[in-house]
Length: 199
Image 1 (cartoon, rainbow, N blue to C red):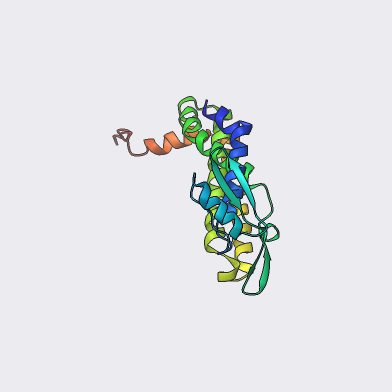
Image 2: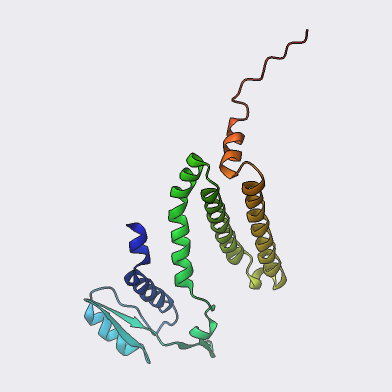
């Protein structure tokens, strides 16, 4: 049921609307975003925001600010400065992976199946990779640490994620499997040592 709602075209449309609105809220002082449901504020803000368009969403009216703004004499094109890539689909994939983890991990631990072990390994590695990638992107910005260190960190993360996934697949194919290895690690110290008699 949750996956149906996540994968429906309606939710993708709403996420795209939200993404386009969030990009337009903070770019110029002359373009004020109105409060929801107040059409008088919307109309006055529309007059203040040149080259803008009004997005009607039921009773709510939103202002889409112009794509080119001038800050301190420098003209900035928001569309050109935005990072390339389809962030909506990536966001949906991240949410699907996050929602699948609490289901796949217990299922893999209970069944000790090689297919579920592989799925669990892929989901855990990709979830961790996306999280660490966000940390690197947020804290190792080129404007703060220089242009070389972020590239090195991203490359190191790719190598670490690939090596981790390869190691987990080797454990599944050539060893007891990820679930069995986790259970064996949990059992360390719980089994009483065998009685060794020296006679």
